[in-house]
Structures are given as structure tokens and as C-alpha cells.
Length: 357
Image (cartoon, rainbow, N blue to C red; front, side, top):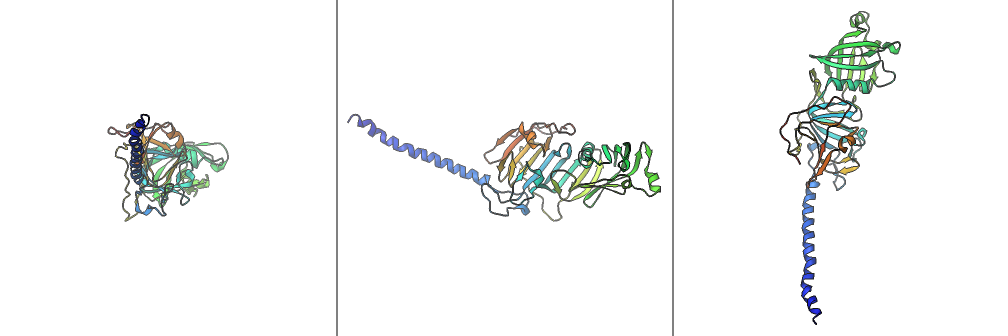
């Protein structure tokens, strides 16, 4: 009897343990359910991009990911890219139902709703040297560019008709917008330092009679170089409407206009995003083979006095040495350190103190 007494006294305590544990599990599951409601909440910046199919854990039902650039140097590959003070739009997969996969940028397009991009003289030169002129039969090479007021100055080398020696070339002219093309029309041409345009015009010759240039998104016709901004950049094509183009000391500006009558996109970046960041909102995103549904992803400069440099081709190298944090609401914060891009040295921005997580 004495041996049974401790056991009898302990029975109520033993019976209470499972009930207490079950209560804790229920409370945890309730909290998890509330968090999931936030994780799987779709907030597309534009109503026209709402989910087109029922959503689930591995598919939000929305095609594309909302894109907001704020004071970012965005590169496609190598030194080919631009600076954007601000740009709003979408990353759209070419295949409906597929996530936006950063490891397959050739399978997406960038649809710009509104904003501005600036190609500085070095970025313009990179676009020509690393893409437009980068083929064996090119008759032009080694472009360097500068801006003088509203004129674009180009120096390089030319091989007329593709034969003979390479000769020094100097061009000077204006830039204008014509439909979906940016036209550079030099009115001063010098080969070996001798003015050539006047003599050529007297006999009815044009630049395209001496030099052939027909590349994806780039064409030399008469005396004008035509760049189609939808096609000229590598990897991902660009959709959207440029309504103004101009030159100044910063370089070539392209302004994208929102379609007439459409409401402005409503992006909701974290309040502590800092002065230089990329915000990806809603839709399905694949980074490092990790699928992020109902995306809320912030890529921000590591320090508040740095400008974020992001290279689409080398995004793994850009992000690999950074710090990633996941908040309870499902937001991914990625602090991005300075990236050694094949481009001008990273520039600094002024800002208030950044107190983000």
C-alpha cells in the first residue's frame, strides 16, 4: 500500500501534462495560422496584374513579380546597364504559370510602368563595345563617349568596308527619340582627324555606305545609329513606353511614361528600406533555387552611404556575401555589400541614417 500511495498521488499530475502540452501546441498552431494569412496575402501593385488562377502554397496564382528600383545601378551583364533614380514595373515570365527565375533571366521580360533610367557615358560605351560591336565582322570598335552640352561625342576606330587598317574615328551629334528608337545622328565625322562628312555629303554618300551595322536592337541607316530600347539590352527585354530622351552631364536619360488614364502603381516597401534598394512585391520568385511565393523581398545596400549595384547575370555573386534575414511576416531582407562590377566605381549617395533590421 505504501508503494502505491506515491503513484496514486502522481496520477493527477501525469494527467495534467498532456493537457498542458496540447494547449501550447494549439496556441502555436493558432499563431502559425495567423502568420500564414500574412505570408499568403497577395498585394499586387497594379490591379491589372492580379492573380489569374487559384493560389496555393507553391503558386500564388499571379504571373510576374512587382519591381521597384530606388537609386540603383542595374546591370544586365558585365558593364551593360544603367542607373535608375526610380523605376516601377514588373518582372514577367515568358511562360505563364512559371515563377520569375533569376537563374534564367532570358526567360523573363522587364515591363516598365513608369520611371527613369540614365546611361552615363561609360555605360553607353559598354553597351556598344560589349554588345553592339562585339562580333567578328564589326567595322567599328573601341568606342569611348563623353557629353558636351546636348551633344554626344564618340571616339573609336573604323575599318571602312571591312578591309584595310583600322583608322581613328571621331563623331559628334545629337540624340533624339523617334518611336521606339533612340537616334544618334552625328553631323560631324572625322577619320584620321580630317573632316569627312562634308565631302561625303557632296557626293551623296552616307555612313552606312562605308560601314555596316545591323545587330539586335541596333541599326545604322543613312547617317543615324538607331537603338531600339526594347531589344538592345542583353538577357531580358524591356517593355514600356519611353516618352522623352535627352542628354546632359549625367548621360543619356530615358523617361518611361505611365499609360494614359492608368492609376499609379502602389508599392509598399518597408519603411526602413534605406535610400538605395530593390523591392520585389507579390508573385512568385526563384532565387538560389529557392521558391519564394507571394514575394516580399528587399535587396538593399549594406551601408546607407552606398548605392546598390545589382548585376542580373551575376546575381549569385552579388548576394552570396550579403546577409539575409527573414521576418515573421515573410519579408526577406538582403543586405548587399559593394559589388566589383565591370563598370565605373560605385558612387555614393547622401541619406539619413538607416535603421533597418
